[in-house]
Image (cartoon, rainbow, N blue to C red; front, side):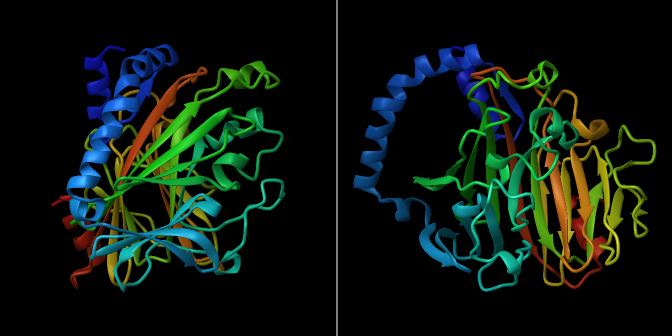
Amino acid sequence: MNAGRVTQAQARIRAGEPFFVSGSASVRALTSLVFLALVAVPLYLVFREFTTGRKASSGLRFEMINHKGWSNSWLIANGKVEVVVVPEVGRVMQFRFAGGDSPFWENPSLHGKSPDPKSADWGNFGGDKTWPAPQSTWPQWTPRAWPPPPAFDSMPVEAERTGDVLVLRSPVDPYFGIRTLREIRLDPVKPQMTIVTTYDKMREITDAPIDARTNAVSIWIITQLAHPVAVFAPIPKNTRFPEAFDKQSKDVPPSLKKLDGLLSIERDSTSSYKIGNDADSLVWVGEKSLVRIDSPRGEGDYPDNGSSAEIYTNPDPLAYVELELLGPLRVLKVGDRIYQTNTYTLYPRRGLTPEAEAREVLGIQ
């Protein structure tokens, strides 16, 4: 990969497009950029620190906190909104208006607990995380179909602040041979957070079945949110789904409505439901705020019958929903990496109907 291609790749990542870099290209890129990484960038950072200081350059506040029993958690704030990150459980645990309610769902029964990668029970902590899709292929990679692969879900991650970015780095998963990297950025002014998720193929799993070694993988971002008034997904004009959605649970959600370019679902207290579609945005509407999550749909095949966006609703007693966005499927060899960018934006409720406010933030008339 020459310098021009590196610049193009970086531009695509910043624009939020899914992106794939082959192992050989990664090596050439690393070789060409080693001087920048070892000399130019450190000199620039020293100069920036000396002349302006980190806080003055962005206005962001980074603080180590104890979040509900998890020490060494991070708070990132810009005066309008706050992000809470808990490296011990590998999750972005909260995104909220300063002093406001908490849209992200957190499981109170697991506050302060540590994940156990050997447990047969899933540690459903809440917050925002990444898993490899499709879930249907997990039994081909791992000794069990559930819980999720350990390094993606139930192992602590390293957290490092680099300028105005908090970077989470996972261990290499023993079954997929993949390490995840999540770069968390809070806008210095807007109520908006961006997370770039990277999957690096670090090693081949030689004792895995042959068919598993050639399986394609997709970056899957799952955001658990509190009980909503409603959740919405736009219907693309040229949707691939005749009914505008893909049924992914035994039954269609009883509350599902098609509202002229928009799908609407409410959480059912008695049963779980799930649908998918080919949108690149999802909206959660609460009593006092809205959360819009965007992840541009790129080229290529997608998991779950072509779904790039999915909505899951959980029954009582754990009253939450999941807004899930997925990237295209890629077969990864050692040295390959893929990227997916999610943008999260908070809005205050304005007293309109949930549908009207969802249309407003999505720009759908």
